[in-house]
Length: 246
Length: 246
DNA sequence: CCCTATCTTTAACAAAAGTTAATGTTCACC
DNA sequence: GGTGAACATTAACTTTTGTTAAAGATAGGG
Image 1 (cartoon, rainbow over the protein chains, first blue to last red):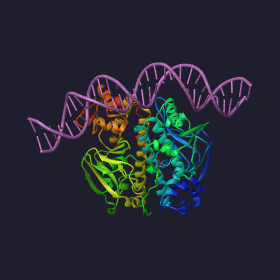
Image 2 (image 1 turned 120 degrees about the vertical axis):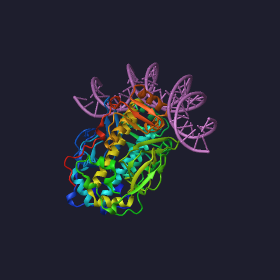
Image 3 (image 1 turned 135 degrees about the vertical axis):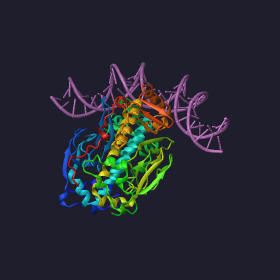
C-alpha cells in the first residue's frame, strides 16, 4: 500500500497548492504496512518506546495524558488522515497514550524509514510538515478553548472543529453529521467534570443544535453551533505559501 | 553570524546525541541576519504574512491569541534558544501575535531559505525538528495545566517549566532565578483573571516559594515548587533515539 | 518633585464548575 | 427475560473562579 491510496490523507494534501497525486506516489521500497485495531484498544502508552509512525485511514482515536492524581486530559482527537507518532524518529518515549474510540484502520512506517522518506521525497516531507504544523495549530486552539471559553461555548467550539476537520479529510458535508463521542469523553477533552460536561451538553441539545443516539452525537444545526462558539476557522484552513518551490 | 554562534541554541542541541558543533557550522551562504527589538514590541501580528524564521539569542517573548470578546490567551513563552516562525515556509499567515517581554536579540532566515537549509544540512533539519517536537510537547503540557490543575498548582507548574527550559538553554542553575513576569501575564498564560492570578500567586509567596521585585518574580525554593506542582519533567528532557543515523 | 500609567492589593459579591450521592436508562450478553 | 456494566440524569451542596469597584504602591517622564 502506498501513501496516495490513503484516501483522507491524500484528500487533505490535495488542498496544498504545491503538491499533486504524483508527488504522493512512492516506489515499492516505501510501501506501508496495514494494521487494524478494535475499538477501545491502546495503540501506545505514555512512556512507551515509539517504533512506528501511523497514518489513519479510517476511525477515531484520542491522545491523552494521565496525571499523578488519576485525572485524564485529552489533548486532541485523531481523525482519518491524521498522523500518529510523526516525531517517533526523534523522540524515544511517548508522552501520551493513544487509544481508539472506534475500530481503526491505519498504515505504518518504521520510525527508522521516515528519515529516508523525507530525504528522498522532499515535497512529501513538506506536505507532512504541513500536517505537523496544523496539529500544532489545533493544540493552540485547544489551549484557547480551555483558557478562555466557558463550558457551553467550549463544547460547541470543539464540536465544530471536529466537523471541519472531517470535512477537510473528505467527509461529505451533510446537513448533519455523527461523532462517536459521549459526555464523559467531551468532559475529558474540555477540562470539565462529567457532570458539568453534561450540563453544558444539555444546553446545546435544549436549543436543538445537537442530538444524541447511543454512542454518538449528531450535529443538527452547524451554522448556529459555529455562531454560538464564535468559531474562527482560519487555523484549520490550508492557506499555504502561494509559490512554494521545492 | 552562523547557527553555532547562537549560544542558547547550540547549548540545547548539544544535548542531542546525534549532533555536534561541526554539524551546526554552515557555510557563508547560510549566514543569519541579526535583529534587535525593544521590550513590549510586536514582532508579528495575528494574520500577518510570515516572511522569516527567527532564533532567539537573548530575551523573552510571548505567543498569544486575541479572542472576539477581547480576551487574550498566551499559548507559550519564547525563551533564548527558541525558534519563532518555524512553519513560515509552509503557512502563509500567522495564527498568533508575538510580542517581546524584554528587549530581544534574534537572528533570522528568510522563509524561502529554510527549505534549502533543510535539504543541504539534514542533521540540522533533524535537530530543528526536535525543537518543533519539544514545542509541541510544551503545548500539550499547557493543555493539561489548563484542563486539570487548580490555580495554585497551575502557577507553580508553569514557573517550574520556565525554570527548566532556561536551564536547558544553558542558564546556570542558581538556587534562585528571576523571571520577567508579573501577575497579569501569569493570568493571561494560565487562563485566570488577574485577580485570581494574584490570589494564586500570593499563596506561593506566602509559603516563601517565590518573591517579587518590580517587573520580575524570583523562584526561591525550586524543589518545593516542583513538588507542589507535581512536576514531571519528562516532556522537557532531550531523550532521543539512541542510534539516530542521518 | 509631581503626575500619570501600570501594577498590586483588598473586599464583597456573583457565577461557574466540582463533588457526592442517588437513581434512571440502555444495551450487550448470558 | 434477567443481569450487570456503562452511560446519563438529577439534586443539593461546596469550592473555585470571575466581576466590579476601589484604593495603594511604584516607577518613569516631564
